[in-house]
Image (cartoon, rainbow, N blue to C red; front, side, top):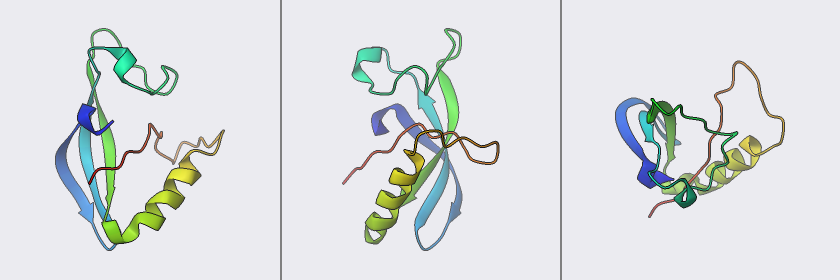
Length: 91
């Protein structure tokens, strides 16, 4: 997933990590991407969308795991909660 997202602007930072405005670019070959189309739909004219990127520090791996588990709860939708597209780990 990380290879399809670029950091644009740092929005906030703190003890747990950073939050960035990012840009998701649709992969040329949808088979290379493992999100289903109901989670992320880009129109044929629009190849990019703005996304929020939350980057945890390595010390906060447990917090990251907890947040990923929370956002993967089925039916977790609310107007005040950003839509969740996925998570990735990089070294």
